[in-house]
Length: 509
Image (cartoon, rainbow, N blue to C red; front, side, top):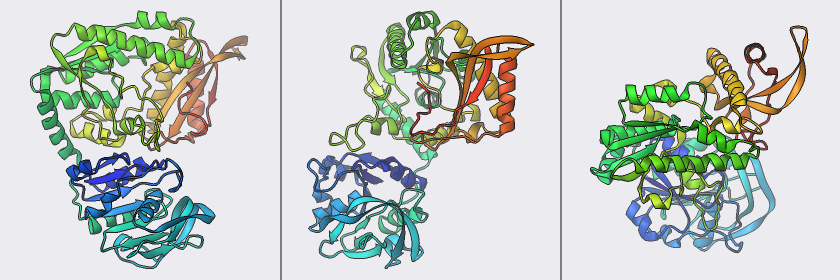
């Protein structure tokens, strides 16, 4: 196990992903993690992440200096190196020339971290401070034209530091450096697989739950679906799944969920028809945040009502993922400071008085998909593109009505059909249609029309933190546009969104 201490880097999750790609388990913890907790975790190594602060800045994050006396290998990255240097008696100074972007790395020692790495290679820099004086016993192992100490080590102390970011793709041999730290320095073994995770998770669920009943809100999305199948394998009929038809789902979604989980997996599934209450509360509402809150509050209300009808329920299961946990946790007020308040984290109504079961809370999205395959789920279920909790309500700009939902559902079916036919579904992070609140003039059958405009959105991404608009073939876009205009009554114009994230978001609302 590798412990990653989060000093606020935008790349901290990427560090974890790189470690896990080598089949080594890791956990991200805040800087204020207690030294006794670290000892209890028994990590083979510790990685100190980068961060946006200056080491001498008031309130800058600090970890317990005693981590360097545990005899455990420590790798400091960017700010992590600067913390290491400061903690061990060296000196960090403001750089004469700040370094951001690509830099040529000149390696002095081809051992340890740099074993098997070319003497000259590229790296990705992002720092305003630099190392002025190394602590006693350290030596410089690499430099760049602007940074004299780009890497340093004290092998006898098992302390290593990189001023650049090895975890990003812009450092071509960074993967090799992380591999060297894991296996040459820390002595890790490749034991982190979805087979081992599934086995351990089943045992942990059974231990936590015992003979108690567990309730799970099943949406049909990847996270809740994989959680449901894992829980079902662990505790069988003790699991009670509740599916709420909120009226803003895709065409045939409710029927598909029932078919897969009730008939195929033979789960105990309670199907709740609540379209009327959701749509009545959305009537006349145009503000996107109000729509989200109405749907969220109504879901909790409906879910609580159904939960009360199931006797002796003691546990609430959720498909919380590791990024949800990290992003919702404030670190020293916080480096990865609360980016969003996720609906799965801390969202348990107090009056339900249920104990949380979160079997996926240490997994990233790609790992959840691999787990789903390990559990025998179909490609269609496992590789489903993300679908927002508020559903089509936030893909209809403006008021949500039955008529506008019908238009968007039909267009969505056509879009998905064409994307799949072009074998692009799994290559895209998300692809969907958005119904705009404006109309345009058109000509259909020699007659003037004044009808709705529909936007197509398709993006590529690894983790949704950033995304680029997909360069779909013009022929495909032409087919999508022609079919929607010809087959969906009420649409006479289709446009394509070519905005990336940032500055835009993936969803329009």
